[in-house]
Length: 401
Image 1 (cartoon, rainbow, N blue to C red):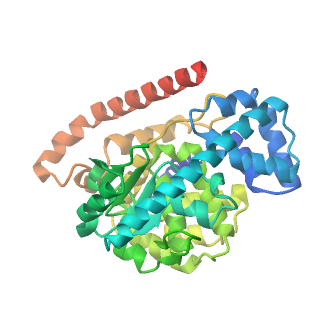
Image 2: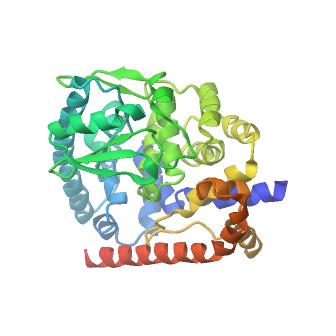
């Protein structure tokens, strides 16, 4: 790719990032003192009905309510009684549910441990206990456990004996989900990322894992802070739920956490996981917009060090960016690219690299690639219609709440 195409790609991957209003909200929650108050005032000035935003946001920014309440108290953020009631109510619910979640999680960990299943706990269920001031400050609705592939079946059987007996397969052959009668799922996965393009398996994570001692509960393995940062940002690169902004809070807190990030090691690990392209975009945002302590040279080093099949990396990253729930209708969106750039992006979507088609369509015979290219406009249109319908239903749900 030439310099112009690189610029178009970087701006296109900006779709992964929060908009200006969401950035003000994040700064108000994460910063302290005058910086937090100034960001909160900017957010309040841009959004009309804040109580309605947090009450009807179908689970997205609502998940930040416990953090917002803590920021209100610590930074003396101005808020009317209606908003405080909404945020306090959401926080109380989170405090009640997190106690139940941790008890059920411990039952799952204990069952796996007694069955001799090796596992590493990733994402929210362990981050709430290790990088947040209070577990209730970090919403989690499932328990994600990475295990060796050969132990998944035995692990599900062990979980079934602990009451997690509703078993169903996960997308892209990632593993199995065992759901408790309370509807809390434990996901036993062979790799941390749903998208198989980004490898992060048990062998990789367990080699660098740390023991996490839990008072009165089962001791578990967790990823070190560097891997945890990679997992948080890697998942946000393709998961539509990144609109809840929890990934940004996770990353910011990991960067400020008690366990130092190995930045040199992060670059090498990102290359192994093939995350260089989206990771560079996220790290630039964290440093430039949220003032996270990310070394300035890391993102350029990630971009410069990309090796092998740049078209494939580009197309996978753009696929992830297109998986989007969209912004809340009351929040400012990022500026749309000019028409010329949109044509370039459309060309990349309809005519991606042959390596991308080989990966996305399960290594089909090369003779079928021309036929697949012919179907791309129809699949692109179907995807747009699906997301448009999802967003419309989301707005209806918010309006009726």
